Length: 226
Image (cartoon, rainbow, N blue to C red; front, side, top):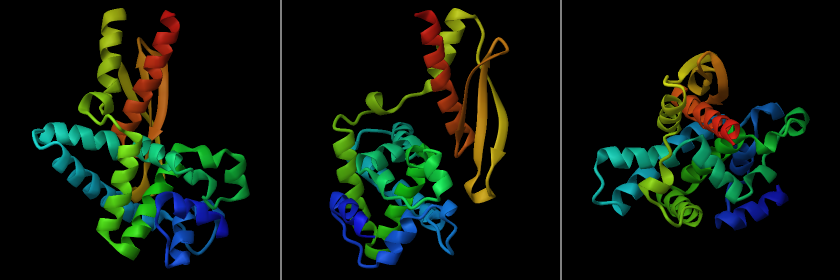
């Protein structure tokens, strides 16, 4: 795992237990007795708390609704993928050859999961405060102008406004499938306007999938207009 030395230097944390680091970086496709799914589960919960506490302190005038919107904009697949790419995490993930050839290192779900796993591993080894310091430094580097306006993007609302103005109708979202175990299920959602599909996406929840499908549909609509 010498190649992960640069990763540890980037996040300014050196693992004492190198096997824990290996586990956090190992995707299930690699077919080892261990993978990063359990650490991902833990990291998700830890990051939810760390980000929530950070926003609570940084925005003392915000009510629960605004804080929830901010946290939802950061604690999701897109937010964690952005953090993962910032530290070039994809270069260090341990994958099967098949997943490697399928552009696995660039997949948002895989990057997001690995980032959560790394934070879960750091929590196990060094506690909440260390995760907090690393996460806040990353967030402030990626989001120098952190605000509700800059972070919260409700693509569903934007799409509805566009479709009502252009077609006089509202978009229809349809669950087209789901896969994975109950604790790690992914949902596929398609969005249609006047029976024509404009976007389809997969997410860890139906809401995330709907938001991503709406984002794709907005881009398609704007492309048609231009």
